[in-house]
Length: 89
Image (cartoon, rainbow, N blue to C red; front, top):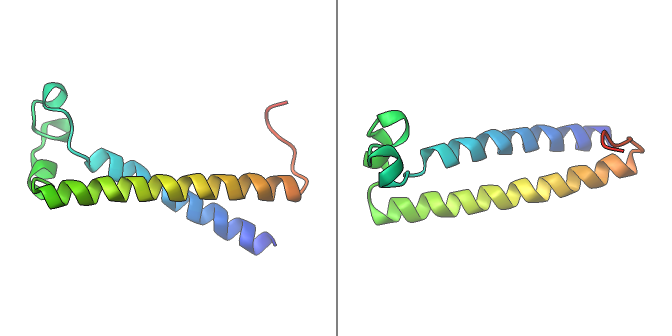
């Protein structure tokens, strides 16, 4: 059970980092960034400028968010079943 728990924690951390990266690479609003992408660099606008690229990055974001939610719930279940106490009491 410990191996499954730690591998799930590792996968959850990878999911967190992947979700952050996917959200950062999304095209920003033109009013906020001036249409240039993150930090004023136009690289993300060039990569994901086609409608299929935008649809792909949006679907990837939704998929990563769902995986994050599922791993969060599974980790909470493992914490309870392993008898670990909550930080918040």
